[in-house]
Amino acid sequence: MKLITSIVILIGVSSSAVAQESPTRSVTTDRLGTWAPREGYACDTIYGDGRQLCLADRYRMTRDQQTHEADTALARVQAENLRLHNELLQIELARFQSTAAPSASELATTPGFAGWQNENRWFGEDHARTEFALLYAKDLHQQQPQLSGRPFLNALSARVREVFAPPKR
Image (spheres, rainbow, N blue to C red):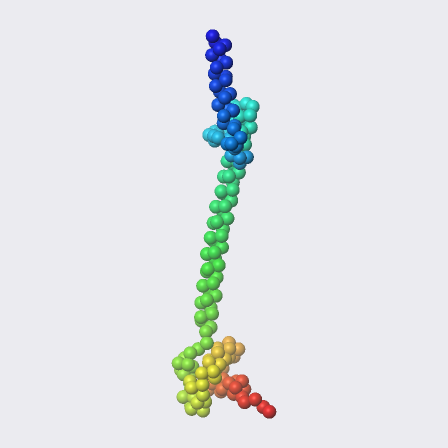
């Protein structure tokens, strides 16, 4: 009787194992096991094919965790890099804005401007010459910071005359 009961149990277990390994339901290599080992040394108490599945699962879980940690670290580094890049752009923008060309009203505060504008009636009326003069004023301030007042305005008008002179034939 014990023999028959043992054979029935063995047939039942083996038939359920065969049913799980049917060709229509295959298990991919990245998901070899159907369970996850809960303890670090849980695979040591398993023998045979079960142990191989347990070790494969433990290896896959460790690899997935390492990949996740590496992705998280990479995302953190990229976020920090983006933050530093934004700071650099803000500093560069501030520097660019501080060295912008002076406006016509700022140039009008230069000592001797009223007399200079009477001599150079194009300033404010000829858009191209005025814009060029304002841009050149920025460059002239950078090249010769000691130049100011009427000598600065005269250097400005001389350069405008030189650039906008009628072509020689």
